[in-house]
Length: 608
Image (cartoon, rainbow, N blue to C red; front, side, top):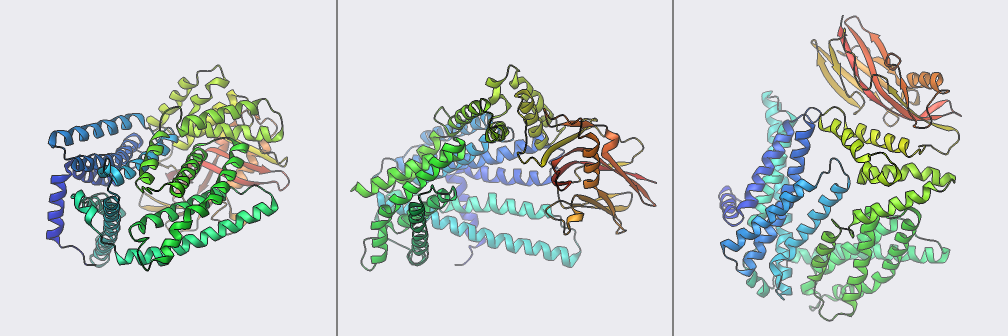
């Protein structure tokens, strides 16, 4: 495989601009947006950064939807007026989605973006063959797209690696300070720009001739026959043995089995699609045997999948992921029955049915989000009338889920307070860039638990849940100090500069500390001198011992005078004060120590 010449790439790009003008512009604009994002500081430009990322996501949806519309129009012989009508419709749909979706506020919109992306990509797979009975043409078309995608990815990898090495060489040989942002811009150019345009240049245009094509890549046959199918068979054997095991032990399957069954089904169906044109040719006995027995052997696995889903739903209700599992289990059952008993064996049914299901589960009362919300609200209502330890433990978990996925206002039926107004007030802080998203989440959860009078507790009697907030309410007193370094605990290493000195922060959490005694320390090294060590564990223990008797257990929160949430140390050149806004964690009374802790805050520095 040789790389294309510059002239070939130029002709291909020109052809893409003529055939797919809007997709070409989207590829260019996505590259520019991605480059713009590399220059932004997220903490200082939260609203703008979120808007640009959402625009980038919607550009991907628009590109696939526009491509589907153009391919359908070409296959149907539409004139320019018809083509542009479909293009304007696709743009209108994506503009509406941009206004409707808000993945930064509601986690369910992240699911929606993924589902729509999945549906629109599937739409590209069959859009030119809507109303056509050409199965061989359909297979040859998708084979071309599949191989073009692999080729695009290979060329993009080679191009990025080559240019990145060139930048690294310039940096090393000529002492040119090339910032990491240039590598991110290079990735944007290669991924959003080059790969997209190169792929579009290879999209078939003569759909009638595809039906007559009989070409089958030898490498594809070797890969499918000797790699993919044997692997799928091994996984089948493992799952069947596991099914025999649970039948003998007479126990319900583990939740993991649903992922394994779906994975087996996906790769098995992919294998069947890849060998579809040659499954009945001479010399392909192993492929023919696999094609004949695949759907028959999948029946016991579907039963296993349904049992795993019933177990999870019976215990914890329906969530978005479980709803999608239920839909996929039903789809897999229907597809299995179709290919076992139908004589037509129409492979177009696979992407078409999946696309329709993906779109049906995005919006409406039948959507994953509506059904999951109704199920979890009903579960919380039942739990509120129970007093068992398990019920008391599950209540805060359900509240967290509903807030994360559906917002604070989803709990309106449990309180007289206007949760919509409260949520808008809390969200306004994020829009103003006043706080981080995790702080918004924590405030919503604390508000809900307080209003619903739900105690967020751990049922190990030896554990106490603590949440200490500074009375300063996040405001930092900077009088007599020169600079404030925020966000001291969000990564293991950070480095800042001030007054000609380099400040290196090293936060040792429970995960990255070499010794147990070093856990929950913030170490500050100034100009490679002996580090200043702030013992956060000792501070948290001091706060616990002082305030444990008057701790507010109703809302799991205690406001602390801001002076008590500071630690100060000095060097010959600087005075350094660690300022904490929040300390929360789990205190084990038997060990007289914390099993885990989290901190929010920063560091004030004054030159002496």
